[in-house]
Amino acid sequence: MNPVQDRSGRRSKRLIGRLLTPGAYRWYLGAMFGLVYQILEFIVVWSGDGPLAEQIVVTVLLVAFYLGFLVLPPLVWPEPVLIKVLAIVVYWVATVALFPFLGVDALWVWTLVAAMIGFTWLPMRTALVLALALVGVLFAIVVATGFPSSVSFAPVVTASVAFSMIAFSRQIVANRRLREAQAEIGRLAAMEERARLARDLHDVLGHSLTVVAVKAELAGRLVGLDPRRARVEIADVEQLARTALADLRSSVSNYREADLDAELAAARSALDAAGITARLPDDTSAVDDEVRTAFAWVLREGVTNVIRHSEAGECWVELGPRRLVVRDDGVGSATTASTPGTGDGAGNGLRGLTERAKQSGLRLRATDRVDGGFELVVEEVGT
Image (cartoon, rainbow, N blue to C red; front, side, top):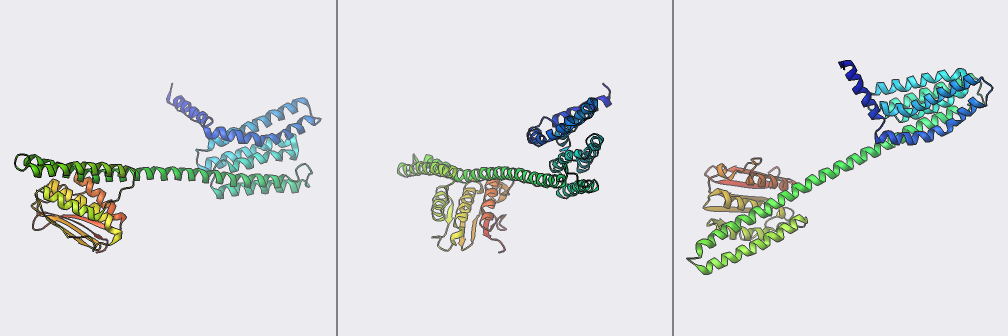
């Protein structure tokens, strides 16, 4: 097969495919109802006194026009506006072939042109111009022929068909766009929920498992030295595991909110177990209510990173009405991997904290300290 034949074959398959889509089938169903009243044209043809051959020719022409009415819209739906307009105009002009046989009664076929204008998905302005042109020409013919009784209402009927079909098609387009928008909203909501769940799982399990590991290691060292203290640490590990399980369940159920007082107490315990001197405030009363949850998450992740990555000896936490600072005297970002986007645990955690901070109207900064160590700051935007 030569290239020309190959291209022609592919185009033929595409055109046939357009006639077999679900949208095309819906169009056929609706268009068939529109063709019911065209039976009147056949009555006009076969009730006349014309020759049989002429009646057969007109019948064939009408059937051809009706088939064209069915297949032309699906064929041009994917085409540019100019192609759609040309297709409608060609179909309209072709109806002139019926006038020598049907006279002005052929004007009733123009209602099919009006329906096509509405259902070829033309831009509103283009569709209105075509509809006005169609009705204007039809009215001029009716006036020029002296308002024949058989077509005296044709301009009104054709205008009502044209404008109602344009309005109906616009409603269909609006409904389709609404469904697409709803589907997109659902997709974005699902993405946001997955991000929330991933963020919560990281924050819950990352902190809890880090403290469990630290306390388990401490308990292992104390077994031979101080069994009583070892039992206390093991009991803490058990309690932490139970708390982490409860937090995990509530995160999955989307009911979990971090508590700043609880996180401060947990930070003190975790730092002590890790052998890091904790310089923490005694209470959280200075913090504004609307940022307490965000501060609790930042405190949890910040202390977790200090324990896991910093190799620090001391950790400081400062709390203000709308400002929280977590800093240490460790090795800094070379091992904390604290820059968002690094792809490891700490980077993922800071990305989650940044999102949480934005939701509360806060800004998060993570930087190395000039005198050594690392500093995590969350504060009101603009400060």
